[in-house]
Image (cartoon, rainbow, N blue to C red; front, top):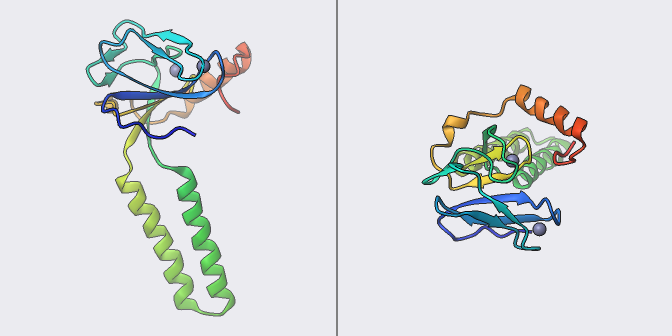
Length: 165
Ligand SMILES: [Zn+2]
Ligand SMILES: [Zn+2]
């Protein structure tokens, strides 16, 4: 479990290639390397990977293919949907049409509200590193299934095991 950092700099959450644990590190333009908080394993930051608050390429693997994803806490989203379905089923069982739809509707609305307030995160296709507080991430574009598939097959062939199935 990694708590969100209060450091205003860009931070990256990644799986350490040495100890395989999830680690979170802050960095800026002048950082030379990032170090795992668990085992101290260091990764040198590639030249020109970071420009100001902008991440040009992955610092960890170091792939150029990154995509923008809503930084949505999935567990909360799933819990909301589940609560809506369970709540409305109970109302349905008691033949209460008003409450069935009221519960369904409000859980959908809560989901939407949550979606609107969460920020964006930058993700690496290859090693699943996540970057937060980066600027101008739109240049990287949204998730592309073709690119994802390319990296998935690459990982399967090389057996790096970086990607989860
Ligand atoms: Zn480590
Ligand atoms: Zn990467």
